[in-house]
Image (cartoon, rainbow, N blue to C red; front, side):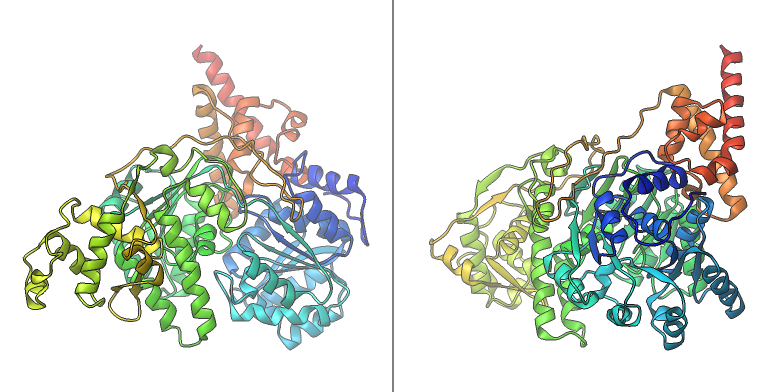
Length: 633
């Protein structure tokens, strides 16, 4: 294992040596080195880096360089255990104390951790911020504090956890240790809130680019049940996450997928802790498992080969959406993010915002505004990636890797049709939802139309230029553009806004895109990830420098064998397969086919400890495959 150098360290050679010898990588990814340098120089840091950008190394390397005890605050037990298992396989002393273990086990781990000259100790915020634990830590040599998923500190973040607020006391309790806070999801308001609460002195802010160019983005207004089954079955054998709004939706969707022959499991807060842990372990360790979940699942999930994230309904905000879709494609290879939503989903979401009695009016207003931004993303007529990155203040060219770039919609003048909508909305008293408005426009002879006398309106039956699906799309876009408002406190009634009133009187125009709902679409090709523009805010860079290694037929067959060996080794050790080696490492083995221990050590991702543990098994597998291949030829 790499020799650790305690104390303040700013030697660039040391950081690169730890990277190579311990973790098996020759170079840092964009943005990593600046964060490492700041932490080793005793500076507080808030680093906002996209999922898959290598946040963990940004604090693990300083921990090894500084020596002493590093505290890592992590929100989930499963995430702690996976990271500890991965570190131990690299030869790094790492420990997790949590409620899943007995008191005796936790005591043993505590004494082992504090007895090391260098160690990483993982704790949940609830356990860390107890009087007894803080008193014990004050007697130890704590050299670094790490707060993972730091957006949880902020009330404005997408996954606020009250337990995280107490972390603001750390700078007073352990004043000698710099704090490194990390998150993949934080807009400007959230960043400012985290920095104000967590740091007692000026801190460095690093914001890497938010772009995840390997993820294809798409949004569809569609019938969820049929589309969910179709989408998931088309990707049989791939790991994926299907997000649902409620526990009931989660259960019924999982059952539907199982009936369709999919290895799907449910995950939500209503399940017992044992069942949740069992299902998560299945998802993390078995290939091709699909997790159907509420937002209770996913924070910090460190599984690199999730090939898609499917939202069955619209999430709560752009930040939440970005965080959730970011769980796909952490290995840098092609992945997909598809969101399905319906008009009624908007009302359901807004009613949830207003139903939280613990929120004040200011917070509710912020939540609605953030949700408005996500509706705008869904209804946009331009490149999805431009809209998504623009929300975080990042400019982007058209990506060529989203549904709207694949099939650019036609944009048309919609003033005349919008006038008809306004007449129907005002004529019905601005209290009915889109279903009734569309029935009026199409001249439907329903009992509800007749009951309220809406068949007598002058606008009745004048909207036959669109069918029902097209009218839904048109009204969605009017809502997204701010011309109509939804009575989310009531039953979803539509009403005119101030901007809509201007349109109604002809003082402004309205353009709309033709509906792009379709039965299905093929998976897009992976876009080049070479673009890495510098961000002026922190000097960090966007994107990922990794490209998937292309495999020919023979290399693909060897890659499959290596994955089988990896799975067997992981099952023996009761750890997720990627903890042994990531797919990118196995791909490099399959193409380079190392024959000696020295050649194996040169593979990216093979550090000193893994070289000793796994070289013999993988070299033997490669040798056996190559001999069989030669005999066949």
